[in-house]
Amino acid sequence: MIFTVQIKVMPLKDLLDPQGKAVMGGLQNLGLNTVADVRIGKHIDLQIEAETKEAAVAIAEDAAKKLLANPVMEVYEIQVTPNP
Amino acid sequence: MIFTVQIKVMPLKDLLDPQGKAVMGGLQNLGLNTVADVRIGKHIDLQIEAETKEAAVAIAEDAAKKLLANPVMEVYEIQVTPNP
Image (cartoon, rainbow over all chains, first blue to last red; front, side, top):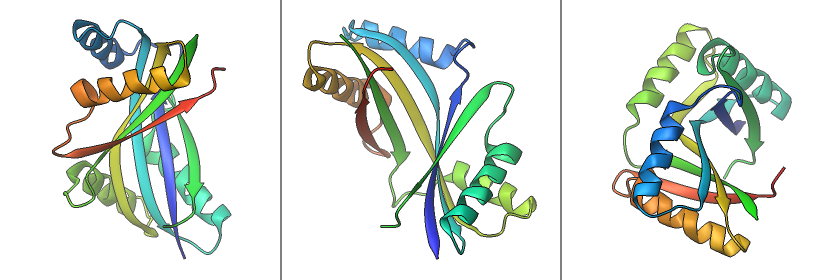
């Protein structure tokens, strides 16, 4: 069975996010002054072949730890959605 | 009132995603062979000052169209979450 797993990887709250700061400057130049803060991370969609939802999450955890997120600078969040 | 708005920007389904392909190769080198597909996009968290949820979404739509997503290559999805 194929599971769709979404992984959200964001910079840690305490760290500067230069990309977010740059985008915020851009938004203000466009006149969108009500935006108070911007943070930018990655969104990764995986299609994982697994027997159970738990097995799919375990594989996604493994992938996030080993390759997708840098724990020194980033946090990740895993979400399994029903397959369309 | 401050709203937390999440924008997910992903490459269009019909387009190649070279970053995703590269990550998939990396995962296979790590032995995670059950991953069938990988697609990588951006995740943007905005803090928006607005009167109502609808106003916050409208600002986020505007920001996505004008700066955050390239409609030729990407689709975006907006989600307002209750403020923590």
